[in-house]
Image 1 (tube, rainbow, N blue to C red):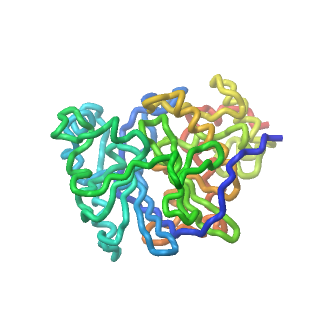
Image 2: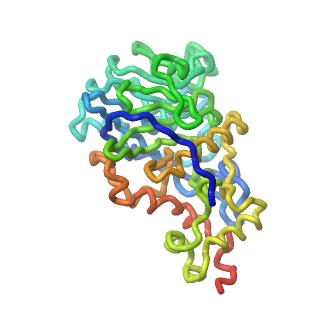
Length: 363
């Protein structure tokens, strides 16, 4: 029997959650730059969407968690835009998130804050398009590491215009609203138990995740994983969430082995053939400022991912694209609609050919 995960969450009220398709799409990202071990015949990870989250508590306080990519991304700080061109990634953005919000009747002045999960270009958008009353919220250690922005500091990865003239709030995970959720340092952002920020270092300095209570009777949650992982296979399987033996795996496997007596055992064999333990994640992330810290963060998040009342969605989660409702609709009823279970193992669909599942004896 798998060990029981530890992810205790204090009581509180629920908040409305909407997932915004920011119209950002990133293509031609090298697989081995992102994930390991390599998979034969898979040079690139699948195209990466970028999600933003709109959270509104019972008192009407509204924030955005991440902004996607700014439409004029070539006007990012020069050190960033030049690097993107050199890397050969294909970046397309149809609209700034401010346009998406206004087209759907949201006044930009009504937002309390924009929260950056971290400083990377595909998450920070263009905060300068928001009114100055909208604060910018960042993770612990941000100011010491990244300020000031360009052009005050020519090698900065940020722009002064990103924060100029607005309140910049760095989360203190040891402050008055701090607590522990599972093994993670957390901050009760609104003070009502509806929305927590989680300290999640490793991918970058000051990287944070979000945890929002979607219902309170019973308690359900969406965990916004940001870039703690770039694929569900970095999170699963785990010692808390082993590979299922059969039923809910079949839909994600090739026809040649869908009728296997125990497809879970076949996947365990695949794991071992790749030098992985049966209950070790399929992949290890390669995009990290501090890989040991990232591994610790992922292990802590696995406690959450194994909870039946927590829906884990990372920033580039392709598996939700044809499953969940997107902005302007809410996603608070995710559990009653079974969305989490529909997507939990869906990452397998994208890699089965390279994993040679079709070559295995399904008898």
